[in-house]
Image 1: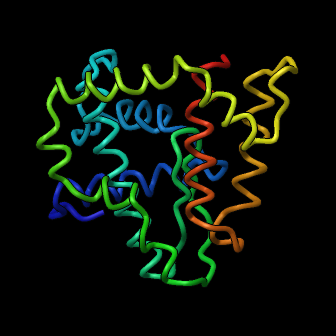
Image 2 (image 1 turned 180 degrees about the vertical axis):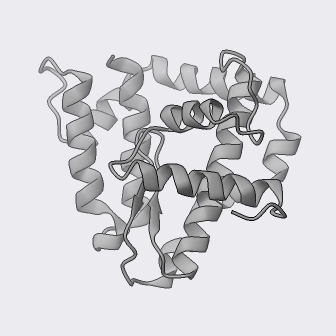
Amino acid sequence: MTTDLDPAQDLCEHLHVLLRETPQGCSEYQLIQMLKARHSTHIPHLPLKDPLVLFRTHFLLFNALYRLRDQLWAAARGHVSISPLCVQLLPYQAGSQALSEGDTLRDYYLDISHLRDTTEQDVERLLSSFWTRMQGGDEKRAALELFELDQHKALKLADIRLRYRQLVSQHHPDRGGSTERLQSINTAMDILQRYYY
């Protein structure tokens, strides 16, 4: 690893090392903890209980992950599967270059102005809006339907995670699925993990 890298590129390199060391993949939280354990200077070393610290840590991590994914893909050296529950380095498989186009999450995280311009009040509004939507229960029902799970059956988070992994594997763009469907699956998982512990 060279020492003249800009901070964002240096974080990409750190993440590449960590992902190679965990071939089974790891969660966003685990990645953050591994970076902190290695005394990375590229993420805040503050408690994640503060919403703005959490947002900034999350944003920096996902910005670097999307940059790393683009770099590996362009060099035909691998693919980074990115979701909060599992970030995993996968072998490169030739496919359509269109896979990286039209990805709204990628566009959001690669626009560094979102990190710079998002205030504590913005984060609070995002969280408030999220919880207001969650209280209706319609999203939970819709997420369970997307996962083809019976809402009247006693479910555990382990069951939901297993179904999530099955759906991601089945609908991943590298395997002929669509980016839109994969984003819907990720959104549904984000919703369900708030209800099941």
